[in-house]
Length: 87
Image 1: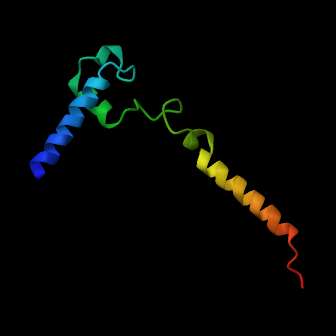
Image 2 (image 1 turned 90 degrees about the vertical axis):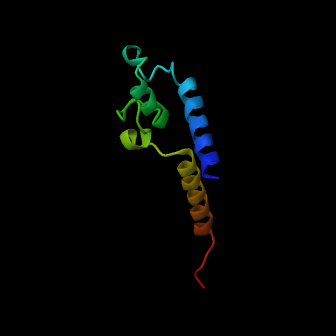
Image 3 (image 1 turned 30 degrees about the horizontal axis):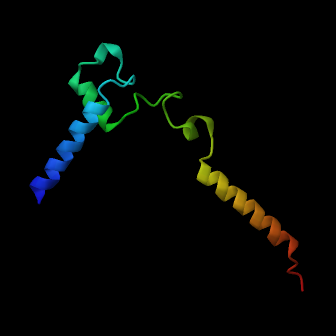
């Protein structure tokens, strides 16, 4: 069983190396560098600067799921405010 899992992992590693060998994230000067290609397969982003990194970190943008949750919370709280609980 362990040999099968290792084989599948190696297969996917080779598949990703072949697919990402000519990405622009590696750079033309390091195109044949196998170490750079291995790093790019494991972490496809080149760096974590404000252009490449997570926009939530740098611009305080909310994800789509967070925006939907906030909108649902606002509509729920608006409807709860109209119901009178004073007895």
